[in-house]
Image 1 (cartoon, rainbow, N blue to C red):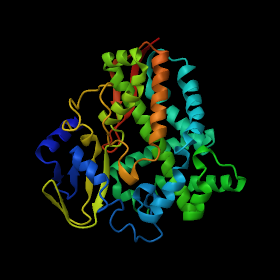
Image 2: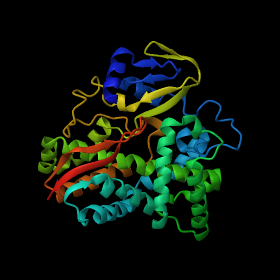
Image 3: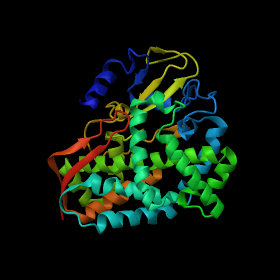
Image 4: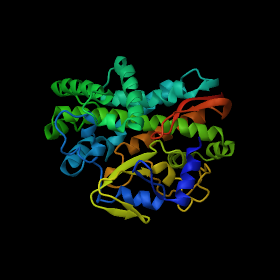
Length: 375
């Protein structure tokens, strides 16, 4: 199924389309962009703000918070990503790429997802959060379960029944307890004492679990999607080798064309209308970021992968007060890995049948990607 062809048809025929099950899907760039900053659209699912204490860890995630709770959590979590904070993260990114790409024995036909596009972000997030190497397989398994649940089991995600987010959160709560006792904060947790003071250790653990999941999952798919498109566009690969300054463009173009996060939800606080479509209070709006970023009204020749495309704002990391706090880290990993790949191999070539896309409508990425790497 070509999801982008469906997006194109929706955008042309009904940019704000109400599905038979009641949700309203938004596909035009200007509509999605305006919804992301509209304060009359809530980030909190109806009924969840007043839910009892026996609830899923997802309820306390930063992305589903507003007001003081959102401000307190965001202020604590974003500390490593502002000012000179990124300089402290760069060596960890460089070390992971050096170990898994530059010095790795990789040539011929290689599944790059298994070899490094997943391993690099996992190693980076683990090191930055102080997760012991032997615990990383658990993190990998929890992330896979959460990725599936958020796509197919939205109700399950907010249910009081235990799920992978609760298990992952319990793990991080105990990890944080030890880190606070030792007084030694890993790079991404410099704001942990303030976070624990503001929201308590349980909610802090839930949000560090969210940071661990979101902080590497989108980057994994950014890296794989980028290499997929470069392998299928040799002229773009040649342009990058001729002008390495285009590396940042290549990362931005991948985020636009193959947005790792394909949809974001909002709920109106009052009845409203979008592109002539009436929307009831608390009716779920599904903002199709993957469709908005391919809107030809915003991006000419929107279906084309073009590393020289002028830098217009794509919505891959959201917009406004809830823009992804790890945006700079993901972009750094994308740029540094692409630089290493360009230096290491003269060409990367697709292998027939070598790409297997995930069966997930919320997150766009590859389960495997076999490429021929030519040194």
